[in-house]
Amino acid sequence: MTTKQIDYCIELARTLNFSRAAENLFVSQPTFSYQIRLLEEEIGFPLFERSGKGAALTPAGAQFVSFLSGMREDLKRAVEQGQNFSGKYQDSISVSLMVAQALYFLPEAIRLFAQSHPQVQITPLFQYENGVDSFLRNEADLLFALKEQTRQMAGVRVHALFESRVYLIARRDDPLAAKNRITEADLYGRTLMVGGGSPPALKAVQHRLIASGKLEYFNSPDHDTTRINVAAGRGICLAPGFLNDHSGQFAWIPFDCPETFSCVLCSHKEDNRPSVGAFIDLLQALYRDAVAFPL
Image 1 (tube, rainbow, N blue to C red):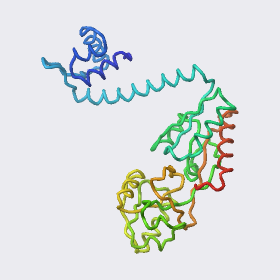
Image 2 (image 1 turned 90 degrees about the horizontal axis):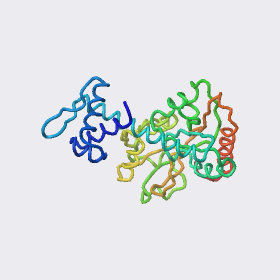
Image 3 (image 1 turned 135 degrees about the horizontal axis):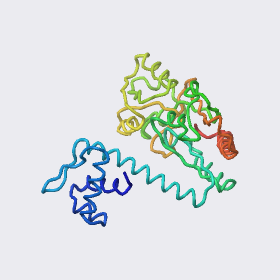
Image 4 (image 1 turned 180 degrees about the horizontal axis):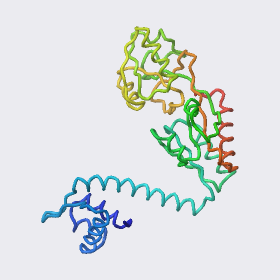
């Protein structure tokens, strides 16, 4: 299977017309049809049903093309990264994040690091669900994680970054937004959004509040859905400070509780590159110096 055949297959699946697909890719229809036939012979099943009206994906073809499309995008990104790397950089450090805002000082760290290590590329990877597994498969050099997630990890170094506390998220016009600190009693009579993959420390706070029987609660599947529900006035929620994007859309008010989240960076034990150590040191310094910054 060639990249040309992949492109032909994806385009035909989009247009469902051999003539139009061939024209869009600037090849003759016989050449186009021949390459599609070669691809089908190689994989051993038909991708398209031919008719006088054009083409239609077979059920197997529809599934195959969906995988091809993802593979083609990955290949495109790999080529682009390779072009960037070969043109300017001699080394690369990838950082896996569960959400973009998890490392607030990452852009500043990249900017400062480029001044001392211009030959090293820093690449953020946003892996919302499988970041830990991807890191353990050596698909990322560094991983932002909660310390509790690292207890069963083998072959990993854990580098402390910062402690993040629990905040209440509310609309800016909510009466609670005027407070400097939120207590449990402030939430009585309100609707609290819970769930959404909350870490254990946050679940403990949520369960304690629900057990009081003095507030309503609403299950939300994920943090983004929760934010939409809060914006719609359906309720309020508690969240770790590291999820704050500092956009000003919501009020983030410290919640009075002992629970915190230990945020760390993980690296591979066998990765002894000085550049990796230097980048970790830089991030740690930025968080250490940000004593008054809300986390």
